[in-house]
Length: 114
Image (cartoon, rainbow, N blue to C red):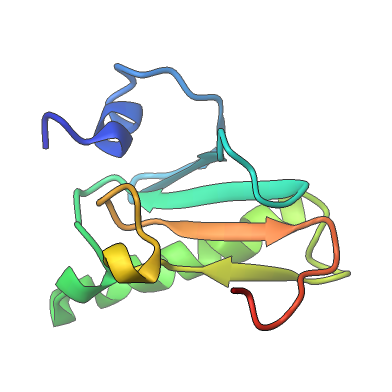
């Protein structure tokens, strides 16, 4: 999608230092972090949101979660704990309409989140 911010990061037309990448997903730090560690994990393929996924996307969704876990280990937050969040739709807090996981940690995360 030509006007999608995250698609531009995947295409490297907008620079972002990548924390992780493979043939299905990329991960990079959020420019507006909500915790000391706040990394986004996105599919290379443009998917608007979790609500848009199809049965054929099961492998992709699994890969996103596995990479989220890998990012937590790379960032040193796996042992104390972390949170993975997927905002879906405007009422769910989604502001960039390209599916992405937020991997948050580095401090105690309260519940409920807000």
